[in-house]
Image (cartoon, rainbow, N blue to C red; front, side, top):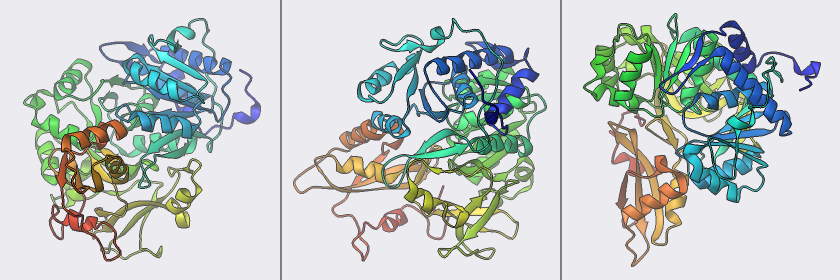
Amino acid sequence: MHIPPEALRGGTVADLIVTAIAKYPERAAFANDEARVSYAALGQAISCIAQHFDRLGLRAGDTVAQLAVNRWEVFAVVAAVYLRGLRSVTLHALGSEADHAYILAHSGARTVVVDSHHQARGQALRAQCGQVQTWLSMGPIDGFVDLLQAVQDLAPQPLVSCGDAETIVRLAYTGGTTGRPKGVMLSNRALATNALLDLAVKDWPQEVRYLCPAPISHGGGSLVVPTLVRGGCVTLLRGFAPDGFVDAVARYRCNLSWLVPTMLYALLDSPRVREVDWAAFHTLIYSAAPATPARIRQALDICGPVLVQSYGQTESPNDILLLDRHDHARLTDAQLTAAGRPYPLMQVALLDAQGATVPDGARGEICVRGPLVMAGYLDNPAETAAALAGGWLHTGDVAYKGADGLYYIVDRMKDVIISGGFNVYPKEIEDALCAQPGVAAAAVIGIPDEKWGELVMAYVQAKPGMEPSAEALVAAVREAKGAVAAPKRVDFIDALPQTALGKIDKKALRAQHWTAGARAVN
């Protein structure tokens, strides 16, 4: 590939990957029961995949999408995308077929990579996504070109990063209150800053052995680049189970991991949790949803001073507020409800509805600006303008700043539920429910739950003379929006409460489940 001189401007996340591969060629970059891959072998795979993208005719700004389980080749494809200045889209394995098809169309994906584990979904998408020019597979899928075989005739070439700091290299799709996923545009600057900030403040072990049971395509993947920058090794698991976690820690001497609170709770409840040599384990990061103080205290009692909490969102990936290991060791139970204090380089303010800063102790919307913040939503100027109004990213989370300097989240302005670490958007579920023939109206809320943090609950008003079944409605939502969005509780109600303006009064519904005066997130 001819690299024009003006493309070599530095400041890219690919620069971090290329430097790590050159620095630690003999070390293991990935190791699990399926494979051990050295940094040199990883670099060779990235080079060959990038060259294959060249001969497919992909050019800077084109989009490559993936749907796959945790495997090291997923990262190799993403790294090749970054290297060439393309755009990466990773489809969530739990997403619905309809959402996957929408994302492929909206992102303008020209090439899609699907592993054999998702063969049925890949073939269903191929049948309806005519704009995709090339369908690649990892492993045999009928009608697809096996990427791992297609690169066998290519010789590895030196890795050279294209693009500059402002090049958009990732489109991260998040659900929305309007019912359609939004494509968050993340630049090289944002992703590189994310990796370097993580290294700076998240209490990393000297020799990093990162255990990743969460999807590498989403939150779990955020620590892969910083692990490589440190010359560490990544152990990928295909899903979380306490036994698998405990076994992997022992077998690969893992000392760093990232879990959502529901995973942490399951680990704490496992009789095998004390088999882990917690004295040798360095850092356990929990994120993506609030955790209860009682569970945090339990984790500290069992695991010792290893916990780090990070608060962020897709639009400012992962890093807005932080409670580090030292915070966890000294804070009271009441303070453990805090989201933390701002990351370096990130400016955080609590603003009122007029955009003015509220005084300490008063409630305001968490707003942030800095090098992590997204460039906007793809092809959605109205939502971009609202989210970035006044030069701040408006998170939709309501908090106050305590006298201790910590930020405490107490509510959400946006209609969103965080269940098991996943963002679930009620509007999308309500639309799916109301599409069913026996449903007159529906309201979906999150209610507190010990396991899930918040449990997705649907209130359904049936049409006169109709008696839809809860099981059928749950199945319909699962089909339309995926398993994560499927309500875990459905209550039928004669008439949904309304506000004075005739809108469904969700506050009245939520008030039945949340203690008065308490924070309205869990």
